[in-house]
Image: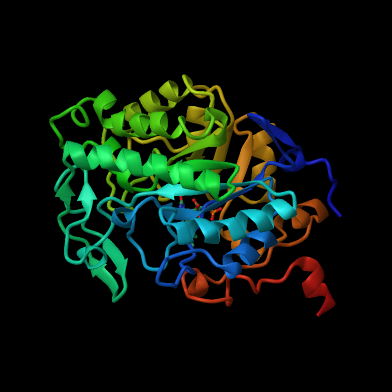
Length: 370
Ligand SMILES: Cc1cc2nc3c(=O)[nH]c(=O)nc-3n(C[C@H](O)[C@H](O)[C@H](O)COP(=O)(O)O)c2cc1C
């Protein structure tokens, strides 16, 4: 049995919240909102409640409007039915003394006209990411999106603000803005996907503007210390995103400027692909950004118990977000407490409807009783 004294299992103060440990459930799309409203259900409540021993649960990406969607069966946070559905989730997690933030999401150009009655998806510029979109009819090639007008941008900022209002009504402890992984915010940051010549393109400051506009709108709804920001600075060759020489200076600017806010946390991912041969990218995100960011730093990607404990002990992160390990180990925290093995996940059921591969992974105790 492992010692209970582990950095991951120490409580942490995040704004006015005390999280019971530093093991965070990473946001993960699970595509179970397969109803006409794209509303969460009792099944979602059961899934998240099973994982409520995490210090913080971050929900799957949840579209802020009908225009923000890019995958089938993802839940939204813009209709009354969706708010009611999310109430089931927050109530279930809170009943177990868990804390839960909702990840608010706009996919931008990683979508398809099939979601919009033939209309084009929105993006900073009319540049096709040349990737795939998971539509109701299966994977399809992405298209050249519509470059957002200033009115589109203003509307989208308002949509994020309204999503925050709805999240509050649904009982969430906070929101995480999904400015990561090649989606809309990331499309604004990147100099290839953003070729605008107005206040939202060109300079680093302009390419970062959309994020700060949204953050300023959302902080009128939630206190700053109930808002998290997610970034993936060295994303390259995935989600239609190719980094360039301006990428890291852009993220450096964003991260430094986030010090002006008293956020709940900054959530960073280590590179999703091997970028060691890309001279202008950072291979060790925590090491690079820890000195730049003054607040709580959450780190993610391919961590296990040992690596998670070590990165906190080394002072390079304050919390660790675990993704796939939480899919197959609802009791991941208890497993860490007991030094138990983690169960493997089945990626065939990541996005399939129903309980299978969703709520049917046993806890250690349950599996020992079988
Ligand atoms: C099934 C699945 C769905 C995901 N959906 C999201 C999402 O909605 N939002 C997000 O920011 N990241 C999403 N991710 C990325 C995870 O949050 C995380 O960054 C990734 O799984 C790497 O962490 P891990 O190695 O601990 O799994 C998803 C990952 C998986 C496996």
